[in-house]
Image 1 (cartoon, rainbow, N blue to C red):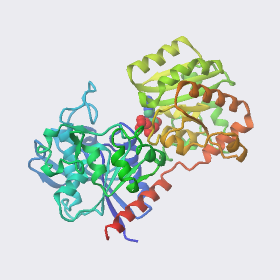
Image 2: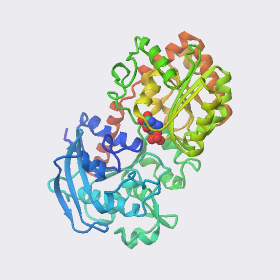
Image 3: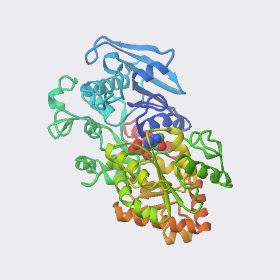
Length: 485
Ligand code: ADP
């Protein structure tokens, strides 16, 4: 079988630079795809964290003038990833996050910064990096959305194109006056091109002009075709539904492995959960929870934002406590939510513990020590924390939306009788239904035999990248075949 060459275009890649799940996907897919005859190279911006981590990069192309300054396209290998790095100091050499300054304000020139990434992605796609011509260009999220537009409007033979949406809430919508500045021709400013509600839509352009579209779960793929979940793009997506596929994410099962996790107090395996008891005690201790063996310890590892539904959990806390539950929450984000959980911890010492911040080690300890992991998201494209929870034997308690609906089997009477349940789901997503899910979980845990079975089923679930990678490989082959390759 001929190796397929794929150029991925992404604004983040784990472990070099990460703000969310996109980085995990961009970092994990290349390795998983190698087993399927797919060779991936990834184009990323040369942020300070990237240029500092990458040694021995080779310049493969120079730009005298790329959106306001000189730039070099460099090729390198780092952390096992084959990379193209867009070294453009006037665009990327600055402190702060990839998208915003240290005060959290989006960089004013984000349209130029990410148009540059897409422009160079298109150039590589057209053979502009000496000796390399990919079969497929795979763009991730709005930051790479214009890649397909440049390839389309450049005209001439081009590689196949795939656009992936990791979260439709972020669309990259900018002023129409930038059209010329961004190197887009006047004829591109139509509903069939880059025009979107009177402006330029980066994600919209990618979704309109790519051969195939993917998102990160089958349920989310269906939801984004509806007025409720489409965030303005539902018409376009419905019209292209035959081009749209939902492929679940996986997790890195070497990083998330309870049998050999250096970040947790005691390792354990599915066949013997003895270590988990120590991890649970360790978690209670770290979060200053009472060392109560009967309490159901609920964990949360999350961004604190409206999407994640944690305001509903604040509402449900009295029910959680009344049920004899405890909460260990790790998260950062909205001020109001941070304050809400900090206040709750003060009001209920020993029952509610929270750590505000981003901390990988604590995330692992929650997965290893919590009885159940709460994910009450209003929408969730895929969700990674519930996948980690399955692997760690923390029973996921999730809203029945998006990827959460697709990855957890609710402990309904039928599923319990059939011995296949892996967690608890609730719908619709509101405070009372979350409360009832919390009660149901606490009751379930009181039946030790059933609880053990649910935990064991979760731990036996394949949450690796194996199956998803196969699906991406099939998708690439389909694109090549339909383009006559
Ligand atoms: P999203 O990408 O919408 O934030 P996901 O569930 O897809 O949500 O991915 C979140 C990832 O970030 C998971 O790997 C999770 O463990 C991690 N994470 C989220 N918040 C924190 C935190 N406060 N500390 C450590 N890890 C976190």
